[in-house]
Length: 110
Length: 110
DNA sequence: TGTCGAATTGAAGAATTCTTCAATTCGACA
DNA sequence: TGTCGAATTGAAGAATTCTTCAATTCGACA
Image: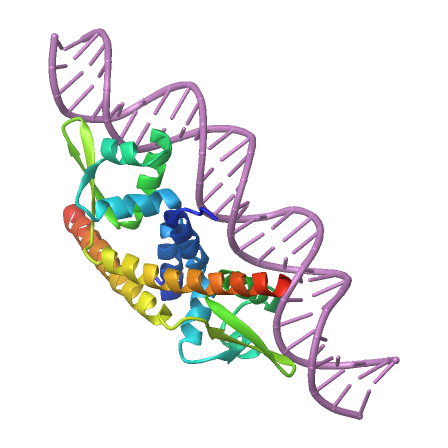
């Protein structure tokens, strides 16, 4: 399986690149959650959520276990929180940068 | 601009979700680089690279400055390396997990 | 000014990903 | 067994992203 590393990385990030999937991962950081609970917190159709959960499952970042009539999802690895934290840091930087830019634009046009 | 945070996060990750863009960010971690140099290291058409650089520029994660007849790109923020490191850690975990799974499958069928 | 190389852009088709609907699976429970 | 709720799947069209080509911009330099 000679998948180059940068390709695997790109797929990994693409897997994160969807609002519903992000929300699921964030919710799961507080611990395992049943699909029904996820559904209650995220405004999305059940079938759509299922599709997004399938993407997460396929990548291996979450696990699903059936408990009676419901299915419970959990983060597979521990470090997801770290990643999200790093992302948040950069994102904050970027947004601040953009705000400064916007501020400059406003000055220029004033 | 009421872009919800999880939406901004998703866009951020989607921006990272392309092999060429990943390679560019990795190369830029060693310092600023001219487009020509990037082009020499990444097997891709000039116009395609330009398109991917445009995506990175639009997101604000890199800056471009013209120097004479060439254009030099650099990382805009400092924390990108951290992010990549966190991603690498998770990715390693995931890949190891998958290998274990594969090993199990092999045992089962043997 | 004219021309060259470096890089970018616009346009268009190809490829991928999303969303939604209907149908299906699976366990619980009567 | 029959039925219900929870969740998933397959299929199909919509939307987005990629790739490639031709054309354009921009500075350097003759």
